[in-house]
Image 1 (cartoon, rainbow, N blue to C red):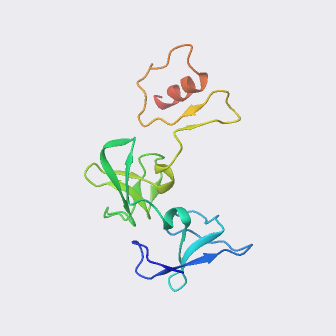
Image 2: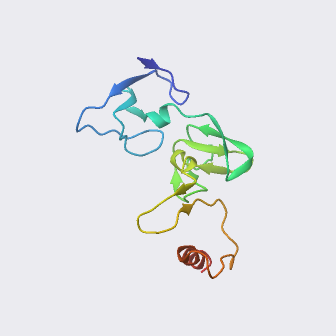
Length: 153
């Protein structure tokens, strides 16, 4: 089955990954861990399902004023972007607001809003802004107080 993806000039073929094979996703810059990928063998261009079928526009809670647009590569002259969520650089797919220079890795754009972790008793919530210094009260969760102390030192 051939598939045309907006980020690549050749058609991609759906390929079932064989045991022991590893591929690097050209969209997320991570290893493809799914059972099937979209592949262009001519260019060694591979996408796992999440990058092969993304939403082109999203509304994200970290940037509610504008929609974020999926770009196949950064538009900055450096050829890279700095993710506003995790702080790491990227050189491939990103959700971007060019007006405000907001950029998110694909995987950062879809982080769950709340998670439970075995090392902590309370539910952890994703926040999109750094809290004000001293914003946590004495009875608040101790991990938040520790995070707050580290953010402002």
